[in-house]
Amino acid sequence: MTIYVPGKVTLKKEFTWNESVWNPSMISTALWLDAADASTITESGGAVSQWDDKSGNGRHVTQGTPENRPTYNVTGLNGKATVDWPTSINSAGLQNTSTYSPGRLIGVADYDGSNPFDEYNGLVTFNYSVDSDILVTAEADTVWYGYYPVFLNGSSAASSTALPTILSPFIFASNASISSSRTNTYIGTDREFVNRGWVGKIAEIIILPTAPSTYERNRIEGYLAHKWGLTANLPNDHPYKLVGPTP
Image (cartoon, rainbow, N blue to C red; front, side, top):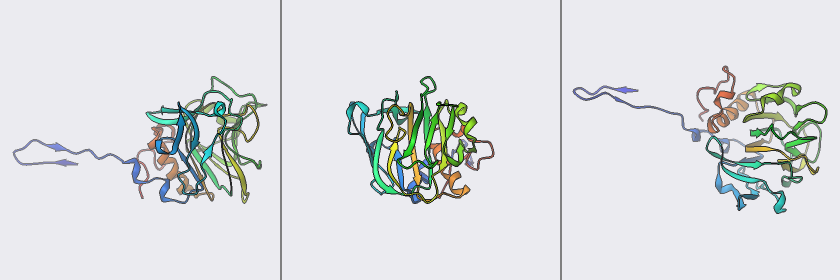
């Protein structure tokens, strides 16, 4: 907006979107992990022993074995903190044992393509495997594995073609298996399997109690894109490509 003042210089006021005007606290979430919120991270010497759940459900994820703990990176992604897995040593990842029914998994992560995995490599997984987990696998074909529909950077993605597009920070979304109650949520590993850990960064994970509408999914993608500096990842026709969601 330009303000004209007679006999004075012209003043110009710039308006910018504030990323805090809409966030997942305004909706119902089953689990919400946000590495940018330092108050949710318990670490010693950079080793993360607990990542607190911001959903209000108390589903904090923990790792009791010091040598299996991921690393807290205060400037991991565009100046915001991430939880990092530099190698796939974390056979147990970060874990929570609550029982609940997840509906949609949405978040931001970064895959380190210079260290490819040998088998199934878990980003968000559960102990009950009915096509619900978010995995990257190089066991037979290098694919993205999740319960459809799967969305990558705001666009629908086929599992056989998704991986080549995640060699940089990405926004993901996938349904969980319909009406499946889950126990043991794993972050950064494929369930309890050894050497199936994530390699790269995890910035934020939002698990919803039900599958959202397209409108709701778009709002969360827009929130994540603007918060983490990933708006360039969104397709040009995404409703929040240029401006973030508001209440």
